[in-house]
Length: 196
Image 1 (spheres, rainbow, N blue to C red):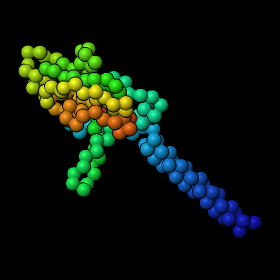
Image 2: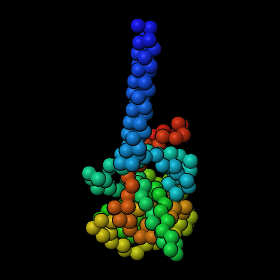
Image 3: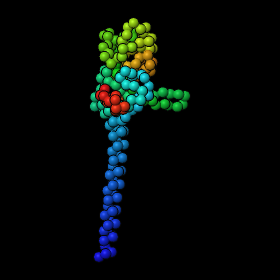
Image 4: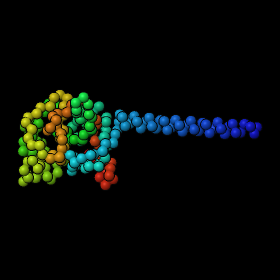
């Protein structure tokens, strides 16, 4: 009987190790699946979205947002900016705001955005972009954009900090299929936690 006790303890210990290994592997698999298909954290690297987002902020992006719906004007999104550099394809995740939707015509003149001839109300802009006493170059950066019509699967994206943003004013409309997801919440730093 004394020989059976160590065998029982060893079997119980091995069972516990197997259970813990299963839990750890399952947790890693679930975390990877969530990151790949549902939600992902992104780091804000520059000033292009100030005053909404600042450098070093971290946001959570809902990757399911546009699998079941379409982008809306005002959504803050992350998209895959693809650049060809010789034989090399470069992928950069950029964060911008949707202002133009499929089929719409965008015009930007003297920092004023018009959609299908109607001036766009932009409550998300900071004081600098709204200060009409500043010359346009200081308020909105790259200047005017002639009438640009979105295709059936395209959106026009622009940064909230217009003078510091590389966006659709430079590279044109973006295919909706390149959108990674919708930024939904600022998670870092704690003092900046907020929904978007």
